[in-house]
Image 1 (cartoon, rainbow, N blue to C red):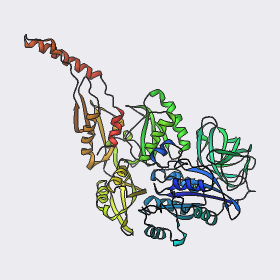
Image 2 (image 1 turned 60 degrees about the vertical axis):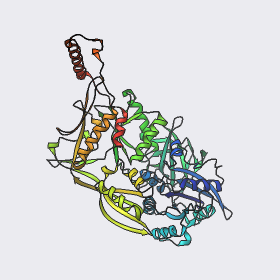
Image 3 (image 1 turned 90 degrees about the vertical axis):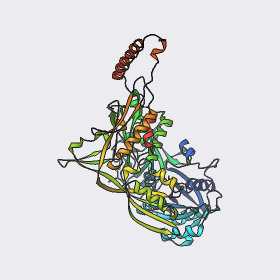
Image 4 (image 1 turned 90 degrees about the horizontal axis):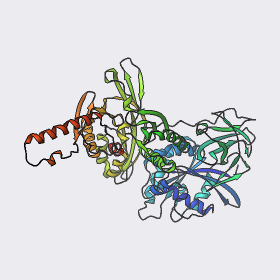
Length: 593
């Protein structure tokens, strides 16, 4: 145990965590690095250049003639995947805090750091990208010293590209990170921090042993679910899984025990022996709180069960996804899914398409509201179609967040305009160092879910960084906006919006839908309504055949007769015809600007 070190790499998005991990793997000769970001093995991660999943890998390092085992976990940096980071931190004793020398401390750096400090991790500050021309090592060092209160000489200067400082980092991990504490004689306690689905071997759980020893063939049980299994295979994680006969306290590894159903594996559960169980589960693992809700519906109704199976398998690998069944008049049966943010939602859609070949329709994302009725009862509503009648509602409360935005002083004006436009209220602003400032706003979560992050990035040319946490519920004037096609409401397009924005939003929706809905043989009326009041209308004109083409000359009454006949046909068609809403229309609502 004295020779084991468990540590993770935390940083803001795009500060070079995965590239630095490559250098560490190369230096310890764990693997041959053939391309960039070896640990990002998903196609999506390679294409977008972001880390989506945490990746655990074991390295061996000789230091002063002794052999050490280093378990490294590379974590994502985007705010939508902060749950991945919290789980990785639970399995470690130390963290490398990586800061980009050209960008300095950003919002996600600070929030990930606080998460690590809450878990009493030893922090090793690393300043990455020191080889760049735009690097400002002195100024960034000041920021790190302010943030951590460490000494200047404790900060390691490194470069993930050239390999500068890699040896220093490894030495620092061995010297500064404490070894795992635990009792090998005690009953087995192992924390599950991740799991994956393998179509040949069932579900593979990744764990870290807190106390005790596990051997191949042991009879084990999962503490919270109470299910019992045989440990068919256990081992450690290198680039592939490497079987071992036993794993001891402090080790990080995997277990395969032929588990078929995904409900039986819960991230944060404890593995223990059947013969000699532990008294209690390992504590300190919080449930995930989804921020954004959207409906996912299969394009063909018969794919409903396949979609359920795909979501369950995906949930194993991404514990922050939550879902429950729901139905819609326009789209049939589907699921109401909870996500941590819009990027998370986009990634889940992409992964369903690529890994499970499931093509889905997504409805307009929204957040959960608390609805108080006249009797004083409270109901939580995730979906606008679940709203009670307007006459029964006393008031509605919506969730607020405390947002922290770090930016340079020359972008303060446009950012404030953006936040005020989203009904934000300024709490305070603090100067961090030089010309960098941190602005705190209270903003309704519903205003942020659609396009806030994209706008913030474009206003600040990519320099502003954004982080947020929940800040309770507040009463506000919200109303339900319905979209009607030929007088029929389309429940998947209805949204809850603030009174002040409702009219302009309704008008823009109608204009957008007019462009997207294909023309039919009859007129289609697109209307936006609040309750019974219509606030906007557009009409998609019908396609018409020239029935009078065969009349040349003669009396006008012959033409009239043909036109009247056509008019009757159109009227009958309108009664029985229905309007299909294309998938593009659901997506267009997100891009309204």
